Length: 493
Image (cartoon, rainbow, N blue to C red; front, side):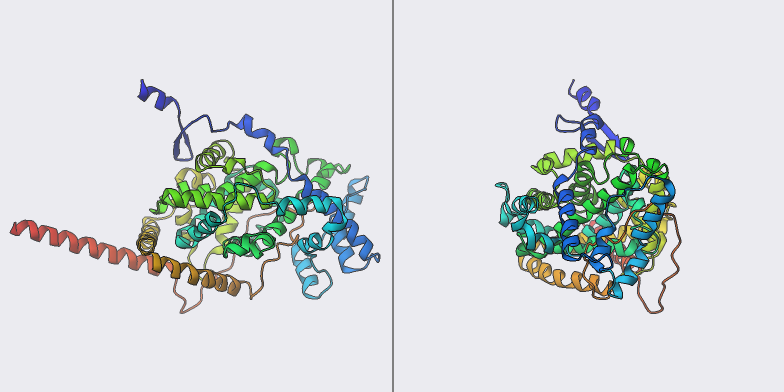
């Protein structure tokens, strides 16, 4: 009888099996979250627009130009909407050119919030919300959760890149928003990923960084305003009276852009997905305390981001939501395939790893499984690259478990990695910190397409693949010597 019930509750999604429990949520139960969102942040954007128009009445000022990018459309025809979109929304390349020339600076919305919250009730409401620390926040636990990321830095980065981000492109709804921003075009995908990684470094850069007004706290608020800006822009294009924009984005099918469900899914992929999928598939298994600490960290980050936090109240709830989303949300489309391909193309042969596209695809297959990877139209890797990924996993397992077992080594390593990863990331961005500004602006006729990046192979640069091959060779030698020693011992016994 027990076996029968167990099999009845068994579920499978993209090669991942789990038992369905009362804490799991069906697609019907999740659907309302598609149409709820962070209203307060959007209301604050409207206030910022008003402040910009008051402080810079001239229509030619840089701040007013920035404000006009998100002004509500009042056009009545297709041609008028297209003209307005062309005049008020520049491409990301044009924006970056103007920014470098000092013509179009991106406003620091968190600085505006900090400066004006005392004089505006809407801003004051948000300020109070984010500075009121919930009773469930345990700062020592948050600090331990930050250390988990660095203790397993290698497998963390691989899982975040190839499972959370690339695998996350399997969400048929989320990619519709991403494709309209242009942020995952072939020429900007790598920079977009580096910005995401900088946010992760900010929120894990010590306890003071994630406390109110710390660097990670401010970065999270800027990401929150960025999400609100993208959402508002797409909604305005969608609800305008223009015929061409009426089919621009299907709200009934895809939900509100960057909805509560989308935000929950994002936080889950950066937390629970690592714990129960990304790490185990690389041979890394966390202690119960580490799991609780890491989930608690991301629950606090979710609070700052304006994301519902109840789904991360415990590891069990977080795991159930992860599995529910895997079953109901992952359904790759052609758009998913385009964005996944662009990520591979954007990362191949790039510093600091200089990994080939074949190796990157092998990592994607290893982390996401064959079913999802094939649905994303990623070419299947050869046995050679699978072996190299296996070598990488052996490398991670060896050093992560060794560090974890020696407390002093673990602490020293965490301190050094915080500095090293920051430096390596800034080296890839010419020393520029991520601003999380609204630079990838949706507009009519703008949609991400597939592309192929040029080769970036540099003579003398060693690829991470060499290290993984060496690991396989050394591991094989160790196994061979051990087997020979055992055989010899048995022979003399």
